[in-house]
Amino acid sequence: MEYTQLGRTGLKVSRLVLGTMNFGPQTEEADSHAIMDAALEAGVNFVDTANVYGQSAGKGRTEEILGAWFAQGGGRREKTVLATKVYGDMLPDGSPEWPNYGRLSALNIRRAVDASLQRLRTDHIDIYQFHHVDRLTPFDEIWQAVDVLVQQGKILYAGSSNFPGYKIAQANETAARRGSTFGLVSEQCLYNLAERRAEMDVIPAAQEYGVGVIAWSPLYGGMLGGVLKKEHKGGRRTGGHGARLLNDPAVRGRVQAYEDLLDKHGIEPGEAALAWLLTRPGITGPIVGPRTREQLDSALRAIDLDLPEEVREGLDEIFPGPGPSPEAFAW
Image (tube, rainbow, N blue to C red; front, side):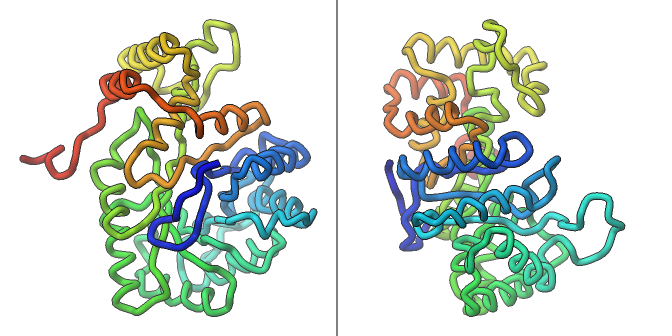
């Protein structure tokens, strides 16, 4: 396994981040634990979750699965850099609406971190991430809450997710003005071969402020994982966002060209998409969310995959990025 510093911190994390969103709704607890054991054995020390993960299994269920894994001991918690998120409404499904059970008020942050710690069966969270921008809560209030949690030893660092570049700047400038502990150290953003808009704004801002970038949806809902080859073989078809994108003939044509290029070089599409992300400036690593052990094994192979120059050039031709900012939209 390869490791890197998380942004400007002294924290070393694996280049692959184990995402857990499927644990609970799609992957049973025992299988989830087996995947986590295999990832840890392979050297993956960075695990990402969120308080709302669990979907059909119930909000918070994924954190509970992680907590049960940590409770098995064997150094599982000590070896893991644990990241979770706060923002989503945590009222139980079917409960009447009630204020302050979501977003980033100081009240909800305090409530949410204690609930996550209980579900995760740990005394601290390594990276506590804001799952989305809260346009109603000023950063002064957010950092006041974070500073208290750091002083209490409940969290070590703060990160963001789905922030535009100007919000990364605003958050860190506010933290610096307040003399807050550290500001944002990481940003999770949508970034992959087919969706490269983050190159215009988010990634440059993160690099400027020493914020590590973690790419979510590296296979773009399965679209970059060999979906057309699987369709031809009668295998599992991609669903959701990936399926909707493939309804566009132009998108489908690019995906076919992508799969043809990689087939020519004997490279699996999903592994190529991850390996490409590992070459990108400013990227700490992609989040992989395996439902099965086989999917984890495929992701791990991407670490050692060196994409030939011809393949990298071909990928840029098929999925060109927007170009540097501001030249991408100005002179």
